[in-house]
Length: 316
Ligand code: BTN
Image (cartoon, rainbow, N blue to C red):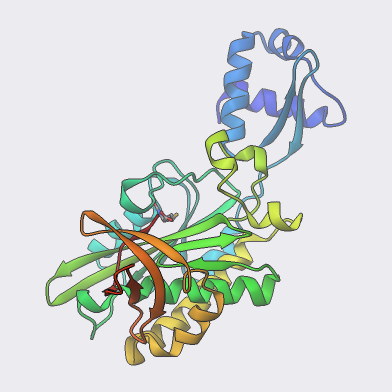
């Protein structure tokens, strides 16, 4: 930790009952106000909640709530502070031979990725950024798409039943809370046409963020478990539960396929019965989502009555 950063943090900790004027901080430490502001921004990025009020100064509201490294390591989960993307770390581990179900989590991602090359906002110490490596023996790439649906169904089940929040799933990879996006799944595959070397299932779930923690452009469309419930959650416990539930589910999926998860997915989905526009094969398919097949493909009926069965794509 840098010297001025440490000194600022110490002063903020001593003064948690009041605002500490910026000029007092800068003159006390012999650095410029701009340098103070820079450190404050860095601390915020690392999960320190610091209020800044013009003419009053700074106040430390909350220290970051880091994950419990020991509990994670006891569950054989790789824990990192800061990574580019947990999916990428998982890929590197898989390339080095990491076994089935190896799991990676990080406090923050500097290049968190969403589907279709989008970026995924992954600030420190507030969400869950997790990737799990799968090495299915009997599955070929064309059968892999339901992995995302199984993951979504399991997450919805866990959050509804154990955390009492009405998390919903939108085909194929969106996790919603009160119509806003609370999380998403990014499944990647390495293999050949007839063989999967490994799959990486990446999960992003917004947990303890407050509304102002999101960039302005995301505030209308994104939410967190905390925003919708007013509570703070123990992320470590949720991570361990996610991992345990997913391992159990994938063991079943690899032997029996999607059917055992069909009803759970259906119970929490918001897609069936809706008018949808699918970006698919470079074009747009418009119609109504009429059915999910037992294998996890979505059937869309267009306004001429034609039915399309799709395994992947993006609803817009
Ligand atoms: C989406 O909805 O577009 C998918 C978002 C997936 C985000 C997670 S966070 C952990 C993992 N690492 C990444 O870079 N992305 C996924």
